[in-house]
Image (cartoon, rainbow, N blue to C red; front, top):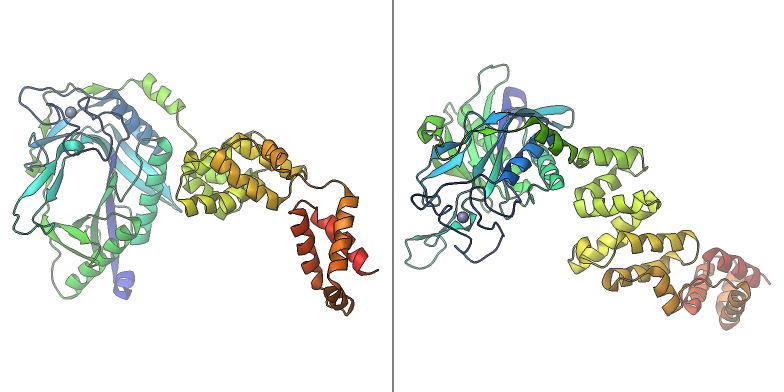
Length: 482
Ligand SMILES: [Zn+2]
């Protein structure tokens, strides 16, 4: 790695494909639902039958425009679709409808740390089907591939960065930020493992000070952020080794193998002219109304970076807490609802990050799938703030709210969980506990003050946690010193 840092400069550009969360495909009415039976979500249009015509799904355009606005892009008033010739069995038409020289969005940027990574363009296109290589999967004697066309025609956004990224870590940070944004916009579920967000990295190196780029290799097939980072690190080292040994990097597409931790050559990289692009004759050029763009802009949600800053500067959360909450859209939405209704932000955040997250993890459920609502959670916080219930009692109430719902007030009433307000009741219990434990009293009197903790525990046990700790402490000290 030392050679890279001192001698070579790393140049990376990322092409990110995001599957859009529309209900139907980009050019037909077939559903986009994930995980259905193979080849059950198809129609003559996405199967490429002769004579059919594509009809553009307006929702796809809206999502592309929204994403373009979030990434500081210029929204093209005029754009068009083109045919990309692509002779692959996963594309039944043998061409892909994409956008070539007039994409819907261009010239944007995404802030990563101190740096602005420029975004060259965002264009819309249709996804291909999924090939399952039955032979390669190890089925004895099989030498065929299966194809699932459910994915064919699912709308994609391709977000292409300029080669402004200069390390594997920066590539990862860019990808993570992008994922957060598309998820907040609701345009993509951002699942790398399921392939709804995919990334190809164009990587090259050049001697420091050299102006022209080195020959790049494109690396595909990274299904996680970790894989992305490792693949790029591997590829940089590979290229450095080649050049250091006096060789030349070949322009090609390479596949990342996560198990082996290496990239290997897949095919020589196509140039644009290999695809023989021409304007898609079945679709008219598209004009995007400025007013419509304005309307879409009005629907822009608060983006992750802004939300994180607001949590820190306005609500006084730590950077860490703000980061964790914003990382989960569900948590952030829930938290916003609680806080805008006037609840204490710090308390709400502590519960969310502590007991609630622990419960969700342990039971492998999502917050939105539980019966906890901003409303019943707020009521619980209020009861704690008023001193009507202890934090410990609240923990058991919380589990009931999560599992069964209802209100904290009702649970307190039904199960007799409210704090003991009558001091003489507590005094009786304190006296009894002291009388029952003469040995511990002796220890206390002999100077072993930590025995107090034992007595507090006993009183809490007797009262089922319904006594105020400060009152218990005070009374115990009084009784023990008698
Ligand atoms: Zn279809």
